[in-house]
Length: 471
Image (cartoon, rainbow, N blue to C red; front, side):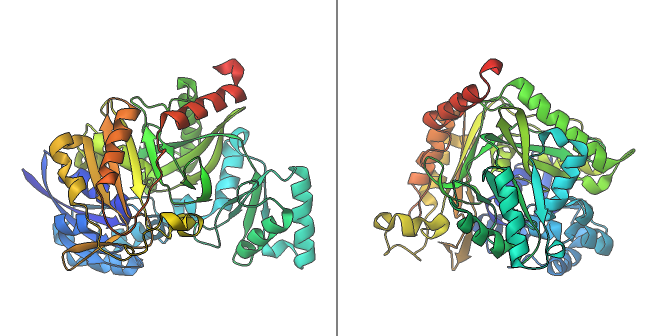
């Protein structure tokens, strides 16, 4: 077997899933070199070299790549921060290692404002109404507030408030979910406005789907849709999180989607891709430049936001069931000849287990928290043992975990996920939940309704109500 060295810039379970996908290659003898945010136990066990870079600083990642450049054939990046900060530009310039992620110029998730203007130019029919509030436009607080109030009048308060940058302030806030008065909204708005531009846009009612596509610079290859669960608690209650879990159906559509919905998503994203690509090929888009959150509304798909990276958790639904060798897929992206990617006809469910302070759980449900368990090691042994029962139908990917003296500890974000793979969503869900139940320590918790029949039925009924003539 031919030896292949791969640089992986990793954070969380997404990084572990990427490592796993490469290490399962049956064509290549893969060596992985991992630049990680912490000592992830999964990655540390499999990496030839494992470098912890807590802030994922681009220059430090580049130093690591330089050290091993004679053994590395290409690199791939999972988390958004180094992509936005130009990690590909720096590494390719300094080492000539081809990187699979967009360049800084095409990391369009770095600015939600720029995204909205791009979509308004290319696909205005699916862009929610929006207004950008920039410090350069207003003289004082009173003027800003008056303009916010006027815009709220126009949209009848049904809005979402978003900071321009993906790292500023308190993030996205939605009327009716995060605030119910204008003063609450303005407090949220101002916390972000002090740091940069803020968008207030029309709130869209509907069901979310996550669209992802691999890109080789010439072609945009659509992947199966997934459904992400952003809210912290069962029943879609609580604050938005990084994603508590997700599911994928057996085919490339979600249960509440039609094939026409999927085709429309592909059509829309290809329009955006052609605009970004220009004439011929644009290798700067290589990777996953378009990971898009759609809202399937009464009037069809609307664009919620776009990211320039693999989704977490959404890519975890897909990598374990990819038929094609992932190393080969990456080489095709680099060579500019990727035309399709095959997946098994399987459903998958991803569920995260998270620490007690995540998503405000400890404050809302203090009686459910075992305070004696907080800070103790987390035991994944029982989950790994389920591989004897389920084989390749289960995957355990540590996320925000750290290896210390042979034991694993939960950190502040999503601790570990279990991927269940089955012939339908419910079979996959049962495997995922069974795996989570065996994970002990740290007083971890999880949502129990990811991919549940009840939640899916609710989504289907919601779409039928919104679009009765199209069902």
